[in-house]
Structure formats: C-alpha cells, structure tokens
Length: 164
Length: 164
Image (cartoon, rainbow over all chains, first blue to last red; front, side, top):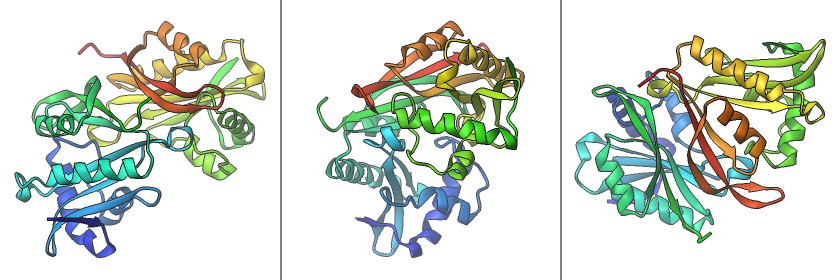
C-alpha cells in the first residue's frame, strides 16, 4: 500500500467509496445524493489543504483530505476526513492514512489537529484516533442522526502537535 | 429596535460592520480581506438558513445568520453567528438577536443549537449565551489567534431545544 497525492484520474474510484459511505448513514454528516462534481469539490481540497489516496497498484483503497480547520485566525489548527473502501476494511488503510495526515500536519507547521464530528458509535475510528494520540474533548449529544441507532453523539477530538 | 429578515439593500450597511469586526481580530475566524461579494456569500445564508438585521429605523445596528450546523445527518442541530456594530454596543442588540435566533431554531424544529467557536476571551458574548441557556461543552485550547492575546481557546457552546 502506498499513500500519494490524489490525482484528477483517481476521482472515478474515490466517488463510489464516498457515495457508499455517505449513503450508509453511519459515519458522516455530508449531504446525501451529491453529484460526482459536487462531491469532488467537497473532497478534493485545494491548497493549502490537499487530498491523498491509499493505493494498491492502480486500485484506490481509501482517501483522506486535510487542511486548515478554520480560515483566518483559526488556520493554525488542521482537520482531516477519511474514507476507506468498505471492501478494503481490516488492511490498516485507515491507520496508514491517519499516520500520514498527522505527519503532514506536523511538517506543515500546524499547532494541532481537530476532528469536529466523529460519530460516537464508530468505535473503530474513535479507538484508531486515540491510538494516534487524539483525545475526546467533548461529545455533542445527539448531534448525528445515525441510520441504525437514531440520534447519537459527535465527538470533538483533538491532538496537540506543538506544546502550548 | 426591530429584528427582521435581512434584505439585499441592507448589505451595504452590514458589510462595514462585518469587515470591522473581522479586521479587529478578536472574535471571528473568518478569512480577512474578503470582498463585499465574498463576505455577502458567506453571511447572507440561503434557505433553510437565513440572515436577519436588528434595525433602528433605517439604521442597521447588527446582524445574525442562522441555519443547520451540518448538512445531511447533522442538519437537526442549528448554529448561528452574530455581528453588532461596535458603535451600537450596550444597547442590547446582541441579546435581542440571540433571543430571536433561539426562538427561530425552536420554531423551525431544530433539536439543539451549537456554537462551534466562541472566543474564550470574548466574555461578554460567553456570558450572554450562558444567560440564554447555552453551556460550554469544551474549550479547544489555543484554537484562535487573538490579535491582542495570541493563542486563546474556542468554546463549543450548546443549547438543547428538545429534551433528549
């Protein structure tokens, strides 16, 4: 598995993964039913952010996007989002993308990384981020309408990159 | 003072307030130096959100925008932002806008309202929201680069509108 910047010609492989994960309704509060172009505008983050893919040869296994969490006076804190092909679960793709993104943010000089909305029932992701050093700052109660469980909480997770 | 939906012809009065508050660097992590059109696209929120103005006759004293905090499966939680003309401080404009916005969210059927980034040193605003029932869920350390104080925290504030 290799992680490299996402290219224009990766999008046809990223979009089905994006669509399937959003339609599944368990992990992301993105608009449902986005066209390929709309989803691409949302996912393929322009500089100073970027998007990457995890690939096995020509096959896209997953993707991450990263960049400033806020503009202006909040732009020293990074954020990121992750999508792994459901058919490629269990191969360490999420961990490899997570480690890549944290290293990128550190190298780019961000002071911290913040995830704004990690679904609390997505325990695999929560544990993965915790293993990378993120901690749960709070859980916004009932902020996500889960396809199976109804209203569940969204964790705000945080990793300091530069000692305060 | 009256609060009513913001109209196209209010923008020439809203933009200088917006620009002054962002340039002041103490309360909002918006991009600096936005053109009038860019700021307008950001502030004049389209349906299902909306923007309102607090007016005294023809004079705009302040403005608020409101709408879903997230799309899709997060769209049952509202958020809002507020700007009060620095020259109209102390007249209860912020409180009137805050009360209006909370009533709007309740009437529109939102389950809660969340403020994602209240600058911790903006104690007037923090106390105002607390007096309207908001509580601080967490403070993201150092997430705002304050023009005077340097890195200060951003509060996540939350008001339940429908009992869980």
